[in-house]
Image (tube, rainbow, N blue to C red):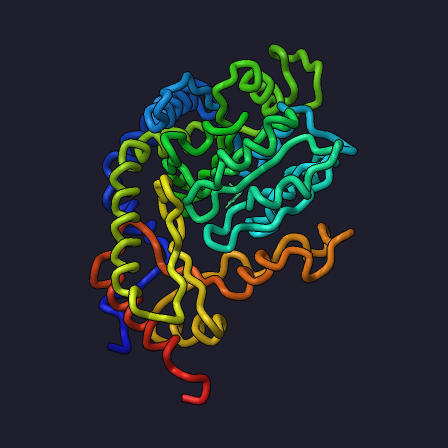
Length: 383
Ligand SMILES: Cc1ncc(COP(=O)(O)O)c(C=O)c1O
């Protein structure tokens, strides 16, 4: 087979919108009728619904506070603001992630300090975390990359005795759990992105800070609202970061579908696994013990990654490289770092390839992609 059974995409928002169109139209009409576009009942309702969804995922079913905001980058910044991170502080995070994880700390005048990853999970390696911590470390921000939770028990074992709070960057991992703990609820605070391609995406930007600590929630809410204690009283410097009512209404329509979509992603991932089982040169995603992976991405490692991506493109298969450049090698973040400092991060950047992954992927799509990938990886350069 040299052409796909139908056009393939990394993410299929067209299919999603088509399936939800009547509900979306009704929800948007409600917002227009109410003319409550910023803050207000739609935003409050979504925050409550999301809190209930997250709480139900966690074995302890804790009380969850959700502070919505403008995007997932702001969410990290606001969480760090709530924890009092500022100039002179250090924030430990991986360098194999979207730049926002480090950027949020840098924007507050803190220094991101990078910790290498575990090559099997791509997540921050707890065994290397202690080396990255100094007396200036004010927070640790693990990322639950590609939809699988980092080893939070291992990370907590390093952070808790030192009194260092953890902010989970769960932008890619809504709905993920590990050993009965839900993403966003297993550190001091968690952050989410509702960028359209995320597992729960708005049709614009959106984000949220999540915590089980009422005091931190209050501080986050103030930080996101110009540092306001009440209207027009601003004892602290804050930011203006709001989820708007249109996006909240859209997210409210989509949230009930998230469990089904997650199941569909996990099923597609299992099918990929089955098809790729005997392909010796293709490293499939590794499930960590006790982890429920929500497959924001299905990411493999392959030799000659860029040639493989090009050959797949010619056969109608889009792929993406998340992420080609480690953050510690980026000009803005490179001071004090050299190539070779984070070997597993750098190796991952050179080898990873993400395949199409979304809830509307059919078994035929997965079979075509996996079979073509196997064939292309097995084809020597000269062919
Ligand atoms: C791991 C990670 N952190 C943070 C973000 C930032 O989210 P946003 O694009 O909503 O600002 C993203 C997504 O883009 C992400 O994937």
